[in-house]
Amino acid sequence: MSGQRHRPGRRFLALLCLVFCFSFVAPAHAGTSASYTLAPDAIDVGGLRGTSANYVLNASAMPGGHGTSTAYTLRGGFAGQLADAIATAIDLFASPLSVHEVGTRQITAALVFDDLSTQPLAAESVSWSVQSGPIASISPDGLATAAAVYQDTAAVVQGTYQSLTDSLTLAVLNILPDNFGGYASDGLDDDWQVLHFNLPPNPDAAPGADPDFDGQNNLFEFTSGVVPTDASSRFLIQAQPVAGQPGQKRIIFSPRFADRTYSVQTSTTLLPLSWQPLGSFTTGDAGVVRTVTDTSATGARKFYRVQITRP
Image (cartoon, rainbow, N blue to C red; front, side, top):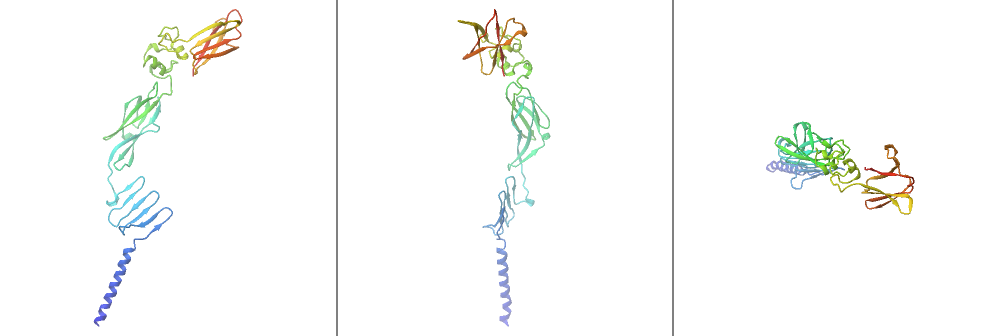
């Protein structure tokens, strides 16, 4: 009888061992698909590892799993997997980083946290200001309006959210050649006037002014490409007879530039409506000097002038 009492105990121990061994190896299952792989953890048999092209999930039998992706980090060890991210900076953005003069460009902002994640900010929550350059104004919702410029010019805007501040540089592009301040709408390019007469106002920069007293006003000197403040820089034209060719005359003028068009015109009376394009002629260039030969210079008299057109 004593031998029979001990047999049930031995069967019970054997059963416990089977159950324990089964529960120990059960978590170590592998699963795969076209996008995911699930493999047992080599160190902690209670942990499983899941991966895909974009995600990695490391679970653990102990508290605190870890999950990552290209945009998020899931931190373990907290109830509900919560983490306290702290804003460390503010970033300002615009696309593109340029604005046409007298045009507008929208500026946006985002908070940057200590884990490098970002969160867009409502533009109205940012305090906007102009740090430097030709930005005429910035609206409360971050719309920047550029001022008129005479050349491409950098401008810096600033945004502040609570204690965080950032700045952004914009290029204000000169797309309207004749709209700058006191030099606007006078037929002369603003950059040419500023180059020779500095910033407006300056009466010497007016189209009809002749500050170097050479008999050619600013509008003509701008068109012909000479310097308006140097009396020795003038557009010159002369007519000469051709030796041995009584029916021909040479019209010689300078300076000639490749980016301008020159048309020789003739008249016998000098009346405004009497000028006509030269009919029969040949042309030769030597540096900045052009020679046009009138091959039908007949008659008692004939006047010549050169019409200049610039792009």
